[in-house]
Amino acid sequence: MKKYIEIDPDQILIDSSNLPGFNTSQFEGRLEKPISRAVLYGIGAVGALVMIVFLARTGNMQISQGDSYLARSENNILRPVPIFAGRGVIYDRNGALLAWNAPSNTASDPIESVAHREYATSTGLAHTLGYVQYPSKDTNGFYYQEDFQGVDGVEKYYNELLSGVNGSRLVEVDARGKIISQNVVRPADQGGNLTLSIDNRVQSALYNNISDIANRVGFKGGAGVIMDVRTGEVLAMTSYPEYSPQVMSDKTDSAAITTFLNDSAGKPFLDRVIDGLYTPGSIVKPYMAMGALTENIIDPTTVIVTKGSISIPNPYDPTLSTLFRDWKNLGPLDIRHAIAMSSDVFFYTIGGGYKDQKGMGIANIDKYLQLFGFGNNIPPSFFSSQSGTIPTPDWKKKTFNEDWYIGDTYHTVIGQYGTQVTPIQVVRGIASIANNGSLLVPTIVKGGEAAAADTGATPDQLPQVERTIDLPQKNFQIVHEGMRLSVSQGTSVALNVPYVNVAGKSGTAELGVSKARVNSWITGFWPYENPHYAFAVMLESGSVHNLIGAAAAMRQQLDWMHIYTPEYLK
Image (tube, rainbow, N blue to C red; front, side, top):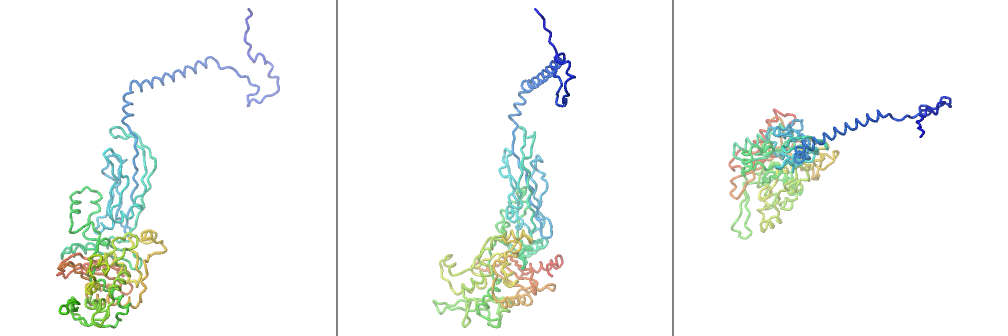
């Protein structure tokens, strides 16, 4: 049998060098040679080695450490954890911090820390700022409330703006809660900041002055508001007594919280400025004067002789009569002096009529009080709340199923009987007297777009005017003069200060059947010549024998502002 020997290609194409030229970059004219056995053996050895390592590692994980990894896989969990958005910072109109965030010092793991909400320690801010409830989790460590929740004040009203949007991360933890790994899924968007219209200094002083008088002479509480009559911006608003926003947010001082909750007399959670309803007394008389002048019940020169009381015969028994007293026999008065001296008899006469003098009647009393914002809710804004009450025959019939009498008209025209108002209504009512007829929607935020958002207006519509009270400008001027006369020589003389001319109107509202307790009011505006700010201060339920009341608190406030914030008195 013949043995054949394999012939290599280069032995066949021995003369390939004589062939035409090839493009060697394209592997033309090159001979392919088989891989040698040594290379193949080397590749096989490397592959075998890798396989041996892989099998050894797998065996180690499944056999030697299998139980450990099984336990870890069963005990470790992936859970979503919120990345809490920083809540927006709240400033006063001058940039002073009122509410801000600080790093938490209570979280067991910084990754799950919730920023600590902190509040300025200044007094008088509680009802303006409100407080927050923190995100909460159950016993298994899962958050059932992932957001801060504003409670009361601007924290509640502007919660959406201040909150921002939480982010999220996936966290792997073992059975002991130790974090094994984590990954951010979505970053947090920080909350927006808010600049309020209030001046913290003025507001704190107002609170201190109200609380000082209340404590000294025995009033249960009080409230005060100062508002810009040109823009509707509230410079100060405070309610006494108040709670602590820090205590209510932290919830660590259970004794203090219990004290707040159990104070049924002081009602520290009641925002008296917005939600408190009070009998106004004589502070309604400027509006009644506007009505009587506009309806031609009297003219500016009309003089009514007051003798300390008027007597009305009983329509069912001529031998009986009802006596309606004044606080003093004030003699003959025109409208300016009737406002200044706060004569009840004068306003009884022009309100319900007496002898030959025609009165406005309850329909017009109701009309003019509503025209200046009483008995109605404020348009949607931070200040929208209680609408109050103006007594009318329909109201009396529905409430008591009784008929209306002339005495009811007399009491209503001087702000008694069932009349109920809020301090914020009072301040915007007197602001509309001061600015000659613009009933403004008040705002708690400082100008521009934020104030527009608060009132529902656009920035170029500010200030937002609910309505223009289209009454003769001469009547506004007469009422201005009567209120200035009240300060210079009448019942509001406590506000007769040398550094700014104030126009004012005091009021003492009798409470209950015995009339042993009263609400004390002072309201007005400054400067008299070109009004910039209106104010209303109320002290709640004090002794009828008190000679010191709301006017004293406002006098202390003006004196304080003259020293520390004189820019507002110019």
